[in-house]
Amino acid sequence: MALAQGRPIIHKLDDPTGIGKIRARCLREFSRRVAIIEPQIKALIKTTLEQSLVEVVQVNEVVLEPNAHIVNRAQYVYELSPDRVNQVDKLIKNIIYRQMLGFEDPIWSLQWWFNTYTRQSVEKGYSDSLQSAQNLSPASVVGQEVSAEIRSIDLEQILNQPYYRRRLENVYGRTFNSMVGFSDDTAKQLSGILARAVTSGVNYRAIASELKKTFDDMSGYRALRIVRTELNKSATDAYMQNTEDLNRDIYSSGGFRVAVMHLSALAPNTRRTHAARHGDIFTPTEQAEWWDSGYNRLNCQCTVVDVLVDKKTGEVLQTSLHQKAVEQGKEYFKEVGTGKK
Image 1: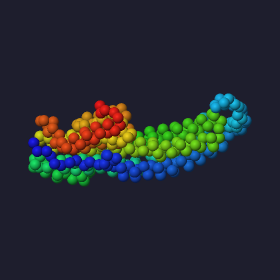
Image 2 (image 1 turned 180 degrees about the vertical axis):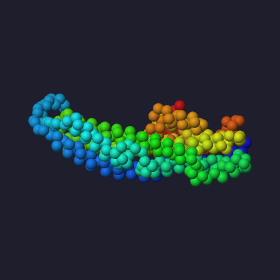
Image 3 (image 1 turned 60 degrees about the vertical axis):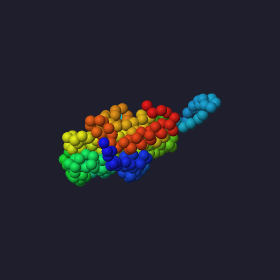
Image 4 (image 1 turned 30 degrees about the horizontal axis):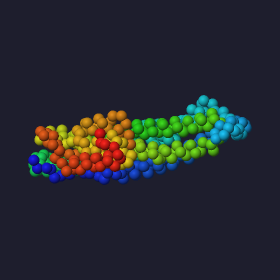
């Protein structure tokens, strides 16, 4: 059998999904919003401590390291009623909600800022899948009828379908729920810092560095983790959904089906279980099930690309592409000093 000459859309290994620019724009917007939140909450916590201060007493404490000795320090005594604590906790959460969710109540809106980046990621997934399928389906391989049918599909045609809008709304809902969790966790952290300051008897200056680290993490690795997780999932799920649609609607009656080949970023920090799948072939359902199990989706940079498979023989028609990916995986494990499992 002649090998198919077409190739799927493949992005660079340092950006396997091809949505790096979308993620970067989203992260900048994320950081901008955190920069608005930070001074408001710092001011709230500082004011709360100052207004709740009853007295400052001098206490002696025994310090064991590096050598046992006694130090004299100021003990700040605060008085906060349960109602005041609840009020401050709610204010902290409301400040975060206003910037991260758009409202003081966790109610999703079509105008929610994160939707823009989610939609762009989903559209990129559909676009790459459709272009890949068209590249893989010359008439000389799949037949004139199948080839013509695939090439007649336009991206805008897909994006205007009711099923696409339903899927997109589901993705919007999922990402919004993730952001609610992110916001609640952050509010809990910040409320905890305030509570520890009160119980430990320290002033605002003593907790300033902990507050700064919390906000640095919020706009840093925690922002990267939620943006990378949610937008990469949006793009790759969309890709595989379109692949499944094509298998059902067009390839079902022919001699071929579209499978997906796993591609990892093969970066130094790539999880070995993810790198071990580089070049492996799966059905879209198998790949989705793996991604949705455990923590495989969390912070994952992996992607998939379409390949044509002969239904009778199971042969992957993009032989050279498949072999190249397998070799890349072997070379990666030689460099990291671990055999591929």
